[in-house]
Length: 446
Image (cartoon, rainbow, N blue to C red):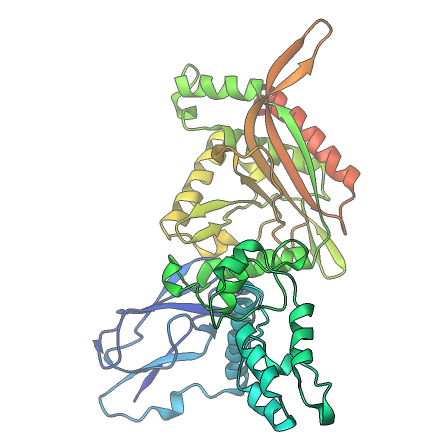
């Protein structure tokens, strides 16, 4: 009896998975436990195994398809065995797949360059000839690359005459000198240009005449997998929340000194791997309990406040951005906190992260300081209500009683959902965090 291979459920919030790659092909003999394919959620990549021995009779989806969970994706059985009853035909499943495909196409259309309206001789000229086009008008239209459908006939019975073609030419936006040089016989003239004041540029001419060849494209690939999920989530976040970013900085003198002390091992060698990012995030979990609105989720018309801190942090991986979460982060010592940060980051990069380790965050930190970024606008990871961006350490002039000193400061950018968090509440959190970072020695001693 043929056996279906289901798209597995990967967590309570996962409704569909992306089929990344088939590891077997139709007709292959497989054994129980063999890897049939790789699938991806917004969390991680998973392998789907063969549930029993047999022949891979068919695969019902293509690589790149977004498939609802618990849908039959393939079938195993004996050669020649009938399996049509296992082919996914559920209306709900097919509608969901079609909807995903529609959304993918819409996204592709949104990323295309704006369409340039062309004025050239097309098949529409044939339809206009039935109304009537004078020979002189037709000749002028061909010379100037004018689409007869853009002309309004002013002659008898609506006949298009030379004057009508000249009116179309005069109404077109002026060409830049470079565009005029680019024009060759037969080139079409766009009605709208991308230059200043709508002027038609040489690039507009090349695009409308299809002279920019595909060979000039270095690389083309579909937006899929984690990249697509990130794209959709970032857009959803900005469309569904009132995001406001507050920028500040914190005196990093003690931070740098403490890091150097740890690195040299003058206190305890186990602190040697504690870095600047670990210390800043440790300061975050010490400050957050005093600002419960920052450690909250917005779910519909309700705000959920959390006593425990489930701290998410952004990790750059070969497959894209991932955000693992340290659950109950406030209970960790500095050493254990640093070790857990590194364990989760490595698990993401090595594709060994678990689903439960990539969900449930109540607040997120993202650090671009090591890339030389002075400040930026992090995007909230919904339904969270805030996210902290950490930038690089720069010297900042500080006025004292007698002189101006240059003191190292680390940049801090807090993006809040203004639907939930007032600007003052966000500013107070940043203020307390700056004090905690400045007094990091005292903070870790508590």
